[in-house]
Length: 296
Ligand code: HEC
Ligand code: HEC
Image (cartoon, rainbow, N blue to C red):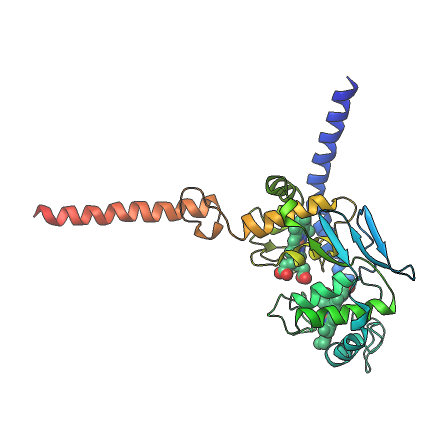
């Protein structure tokens, strides 16, 4: 009796969340109109961790568990990071990383102080920053302009201004469960990125990008920090669940195992049906012509 009540409550909650999905998207779209940029996620917080390692001064240097370890960028890189920041970022985000450039006013650009190292690292290593077009509705993924170690150095300097989380993740994909990841992906990600991971349009001229060819570290960073219009998943997904999703994204989505032959770019059953029809009927027609000619 009580068991079935809980089952029903759980089912209703799932249905409620599923039907609220479009509303959330809509609300975010409306929000975006008020703010110049859809950013501003200061200090995304530490996800669930079982191990926390501190240095002699009591500062957290790493945390996590057997699924994902999060490491602080090395403090030895602060000086280099500051120099790289002044060269590549200060013109927009300001010399104090507060979002106020030399000739601008408060709120001209997102403030970076208090964003965790994973956020800064993600925006640089995904090639979004330094921004190609600062007035674009959505900063696009680009070929990386700075190297991974330069990104690490800049995150180290930004983090020295106001230490914050999340740190830079290292997923342990060997321990991940890919079929669990597939189920979690369908529930948490497919609404925006599609079940094939090819991405789709969202409200206000924004889009959820394709998830093919994204390195595992960046997939964790995106999930934990929620870039731009993407929600950030903190307490609601454990590190072990995130690890499962990342394994699914970096194996099944990026190297799909297409049952029954060609993937056809994962266009979906309707489009694939048409291609099947065109090839099949077209082939039969050609065969028909060939047979027909022989007849004469
Ligand atoms: C030409 C101007 C420009 C330069 C140069 C630039 N940025 Fe940005 N940055 C932006 C704009 C505009 C946004 C907001 C983009 C969006 O919301 O789609 C942004 C967003 C960000 C964000 C996301 C902020 C958040 O709240 O989520 C980070 C992190 C960031 N920039 C870091 C950097 C770093 C680090 C550099 C230097 C390597 C850099 N940016 C260089 C214009 C710039
Ligand atoms: C509400 C829609 C939405 C949901 C749900 C969502 N995302 Fe996203 N995702 C986005 C958007 C929008 C972006 C692009 C952000 C930007 O412009 O920087 C994005 C970006 C990403 C990126 C970076 C891709 C790139 O081009 O660099 C990854 C990786 C990603 N998402 C993975 C996921 C995973 C995994 C999940 C589920 C746990 C998920 N997303 C859930 C909307 C969503």
